[in-house]
Amino acid sequence: MNTTAQTAILDRMLAPVTEVLTPEVAAGIAEMRADEELQARLDELAEKANDGRLNAAERQEYHDYIEALDFVGILQAKARSVVARATQS
Image 1 (cartoon, rainbow, N blue to C red):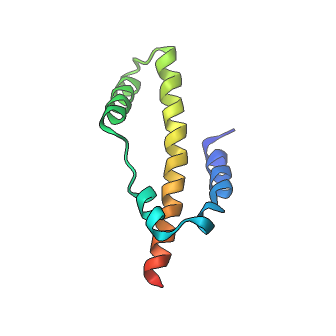
Image 2 (cartoon, rainbow, N blue to C red):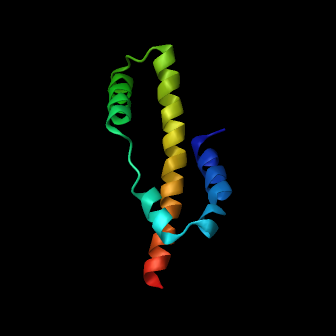
C-alpha cells in the first residue's frame, strides 16, 4: 500500500477522534514533540539514510518511526482543527 493510501486510511479512521477531544486535550496533542533522546535518534537515522549508510535493522527502525510520525502528524492536524473550531466559537 502506498503512503498516500495509508494516510487517507489513517485520516478516515481518526476522524471520530475529533468528536471526543476537548479543546484543552486537543491543544496538548497539537503541541506534542519528541523527547530529546528520541529526536536525537531520529536525526541520526535521517542523516545515515541521506548518506545511504543505514543497515537493514536501522532501515526498518527508521521506517517504523516514519510510520509512527505519520500517525502522530494526522492526529495533531485533527487536534489543531478542534482547537481552531473552539477559538472561532
